[in-house]
Image (tube, rainbow, N blue to C red; front, side, top):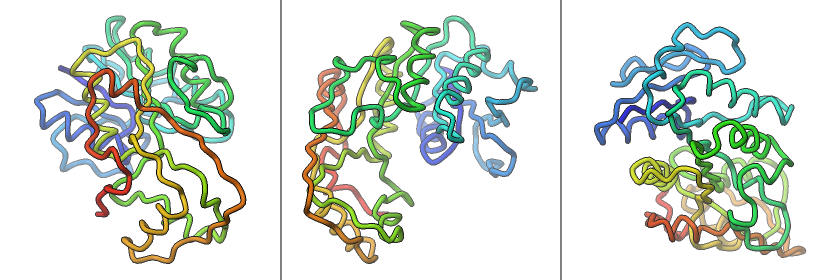
Length: 261
C-alpha cells in the first residue's frame, strides 16, 4: 500500500510513522524545508498547495491513498478548498482521498450531531465545510471525510492555551475531543477496511463537562486552571456512533482516561 500525506504536522508525522511500521510505503510533504525530517525513514518533499508548479509532482502518481492532513491557512474560507483541490492534480484517477476535516463544521447549538444529517458538502459555514463540498463534487465515491473533534495528545492540551488566555470559560458545556492515537487509529481503520465514500465523525464516546474536565487536566499538567463561569449550559454532542458501527474500537473512549505525556 502506497500512502501520500499532505502535511507532516502534529498529526500527519506520527500517522506517517505508524503507517510505515505497518509496512506501507509513505510519502509526505511539508510547506517549507524548515522542518527537519532527515532522520525519518520515508520520502518527504516540499509542497505548498498554493504554488502553481511542483517539482516533485510525480511522487504521488502511484499512491493508493492520499491523506489531506494540513490545516486551513489565512482567513479566506474558500482558499482552503482551492488548496485541497490542487492536491488532486497530483494523483491518479484511481487514488482514494481522505480529508481530515473538523467537527467544527457542525452548528454551535444544543443537539446530537450525526453524519447522516450533515453529509459531506452539506455545510458551508467555514473553511472545512467548503473543502468538503469542493472535494466531494470532484472526487465523489473516491473521497472519505473524517470529521475530527478537538485533538488532544503529546504537547497538545487545550487547557494550556486556555490557562494563558486570560479569559473565562463556560463550565457547563460538553467537550468533544479525540486523542491523537485514536485519530491515527481511525484513519488507518478507514484505509485497511477500504471505507470509501463515507463521512465519519472521530470523537471519544464520553463528553464530560468542560469545567471539571479541564480543571483536572490542569492539575495533571501542574498548571493553573482557567476560570470558569456557570451561566450557560450547552449540550452539543458530536456522535461517534457511525464509527463504532463501522467497527472501530476507541483506545480512549473516555477523555478522563487520556494519558498526559
